[in-house]
Amino acid sequence: MLKVAELVKAFPGRDGPVTVIDRVSFAIPDGLCFALLGPSGCGKTTTLRCVAGLETASSGRIEIGGTVVSDPDAGIFVPVHERPIGMVFQSYAIWPHLDVFENVAYPLRVQRPRPGKGEIREKVMEVLGLVGMEAAADRPAPLLSGGQQQRVALARAIVRHPALLLLDEPLSNLDARLREAMRDELAEMIARVGITALYVTHDQAEAFVLAQRMAVMDRGRIVQEGAPRELYANPGTPFIAGFLGAANLLRGTAERHGSRLRIALADADGQGLALNGDAGHPEGEVQVMIRPEDIGLIAPPAPSDRQNVLHGRITHVHFMGGQLECGVSLGGTQVRALARPSDPVAEGQPVSLRIDPAHCTVFPASPPT
Image (cartoon, rainbow, N blue to C red):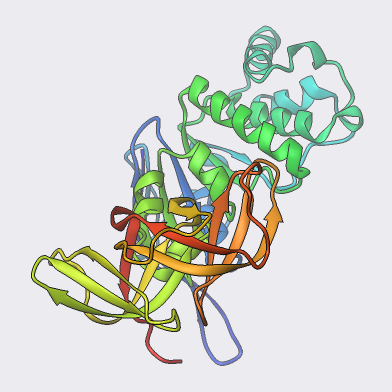
């Protein structure tokens, strides 16, 4: 449904052009929700704006539904109002002088040829029903809550049955509790409508819930693409590992011993790990990534002769509601592990950490800065 190939966008700068999108390529099959995820300034929103036609690409090719809508080298640029898209903005852009019905009906009233009154009413009430707002059709826009505004913005975006739905951080203006509820509702509504969607966000939880496939962007480039679980479990770089969730990155030196990779951890009182040494594992100076939820915290400590069991002392315990986050010092290295609220853990307590080799990812050491 959407194909983006070698997309480049550069803006004029004091010392020459500044490239904010650098040869970005991806494709979204029909009916799939695809997330562009990355930190502020990575180029994800600019990419979406080029797809929408709100920005003119410097080079590259964009196709929607098999039709080329942007190709500067071929002199092609289809204006935004002629592209088969719907868009939900970060601010929702709900018009305060119109009620819910008229906000949603607006795209139909300005299109050419314009549908008749009966058809407009039928289409508007249909999409208001999809988003659970049909009972509020006559409600003035200023009386809507943040969650209701989000539903109205979505209804307005899909009322013309666009081929592609673009969503630019649509939950960022909601408070944390409402954002979580609306995230789940939005995922359900997108699935119910069955529309192809490009979702831009900096929040990995939103991307995990909403997208069947995602791409992580950094400094204008896509650095890894795949299914959310795949990227979380097998990040390609330490940056991706840290951006997609809490991650312990432990420095060490790796040596291969037959089928095993032995890693002497730095600043960990001489302790180390033994992993399955497949051909893809680097040797020499490395970083080992372990998610806090993949570490088993043992209190009282386990015997010291067990393999892949590290020993340390708790430096802090943070109550996080359904779990405890424990900081554990292995000497000069800090590790985060999780425990249940009922577990008898306390600051200063000696503990052991059970490491599952299957949940360790090994990266070459970062180059010195």
